[in-house]
Length: 106
Image 1 (spheres, rainbow, N blue to C red):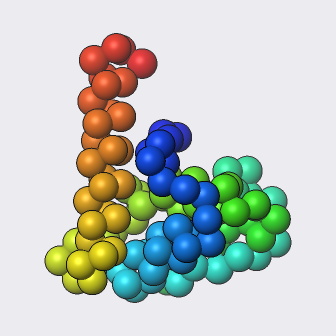
Image 2: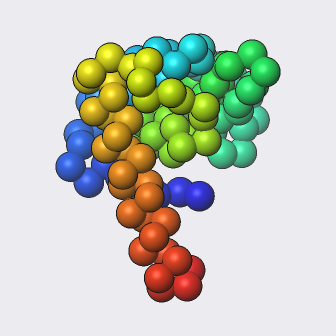
């Protein structure tokens, strides 16, 4: 499911770094590789590796990682305060988007 939670966030390298840090603090490795990933990513769950298409631009990298976060096994209690804030914001927007879709029947 694709949802846009970046309404108030900027597409900058700093944003990408913070999202990557959140994922890496949860024990995942973020890699950028060549591949024919239809959606721009691949998750190797057993190895906790997230592989993104290296040809994605900055905006695509940020959007893809944020869309992946709800699918990953992340324990918010193990995150740094800044990453926890980002995680809570991302998950709050994810749940709000899901709730609004359920209400409209989409």
